[in-house]
Length: 349
Image (cartoon, rainbow, N blue to C red):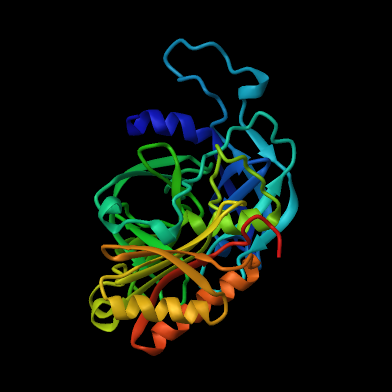
């Protein structure tokens, strides 16, 4: 789809959020509907602030031309009433929050990308086209106007202290965009606007627009009760353990590159472990550390990958502990952690 078509599809799901700050002044940010009444926004939009108003300004699905029929009741702009106080991400660094609104039946949602940070590709992300939608205040206006901006992904970064990736996009950073979705060419949100990266006290507009990966928002929303089906958002619970590690020289030059991966897959019936590394000694070290807690049968070693299954029928908790033991042994030998992800599998312990 072209960006204008994506905008027409997604605009109905984007709301402005006006808040009263702790000093009594009024501020504005953006939120977007992800389904079942759940909205994602930036944490700093609502943290320690009182929500005054949440409004949908573009609810219609028809294109307004010169001689279009009047809007029906379902297509009119509307205010939303929140029925859940914003839930803030626990980490101080990760700037995302979730709240829920009432009477959202029929309100479309923006689908979230299911590609978790664990599997995100820097090569595929950079220079890809994205759409940013939000409500930055426009001088000499007195109402919130929805603003849409096309941009490209300029960098894929890790902000100090965050366990999630962030995108740097080419759009000009402006207050009011905060919490707005960053949407890819498939019409899926890959991030949300969170910050302008500037030095010292320079103006916001001079900084890089930083957008937190949508993985952070999805993880928080799922904890809050958001329950999408697998067609709306794929949770990848089969990947019980995913760990990427890098040698010191690799990590110093590229924070996304890795020299060893360890995966534990559990599809509810079978469990298998895959360790990939071109260094056979390091691969064997990972297997020995894993086997110290969870003995393995090694089935095949092909090129740089080793495939194994547990000797017994270990619980997900034990498999995760064994994965952590392998990670720790490798880190003690000189590796650095690039990224890791653990899930609860199919829910049994």
